[in-house]
Length: 341
Image (cartoon, rainbow, N blue to C red):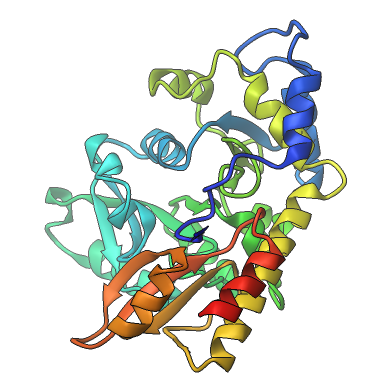
């Protein structure tokens, strides 16, 4: 049985485990003040071409979204997101639990459109009763999106211009960022994200690390006392080295990009093989997430070989499911699956 329902079924890349073992008995200061965390931060600044960036390490995606969003919003503000956005659908109301409304925009293959964002903001600010309403105080994106799709640099530029015009920050969830950066044809890089986003995070948990996310405020623009806010949310690791060593390894010799490229190659092989066997796809995803449209019989065949994520009922006869490759997916497993399906 293969496990392709998500991209965090395995532990961690062996090079990360080796570094953790090598440094295990070394005595280091806590709370991310050790030399490995500092080294990882500097490598991330170089990769983002952002010498002044503030970098913070947290352990998980939902925790990171909750901490960043609640730190950037005033009590009367909410966050704008695609209706399919992770914070709107799959985070158990974490943002609302911190007292901030999630304001949904239409989603288009997981993305929001600049013109619809602008239309929402124009309409809100023209509303004579807006002082009785939740103010839009932040825009949330994910890259890749929940559908494995990607923004272009031009789209990010347009969204950024709108956010700056209305003086609200643009925040990008990069839980699967490694797979987006590695996708064929993308023009989005870490320096592009640093140019157009006010804050983003580089996901480690889903891209080869045991755990860990690196939050980047690219212009040294972290909110006041953000470190204390992390602590207040219960998100500050005493053994900060645990995440710092992992990111120091991921950003050595382009390992992060290497792991992302592997997952994308495996997804391409899986997609091409399934197409040859007559399977159809819900949309075109250039990343590690692939969405199939399947009948009940086809789903039974797939379920006999691998786990999967249910996505939605398309109609009475068809369902949409997701298969996700990862940094750890074996090419021989893809070959076996395709031979047996």
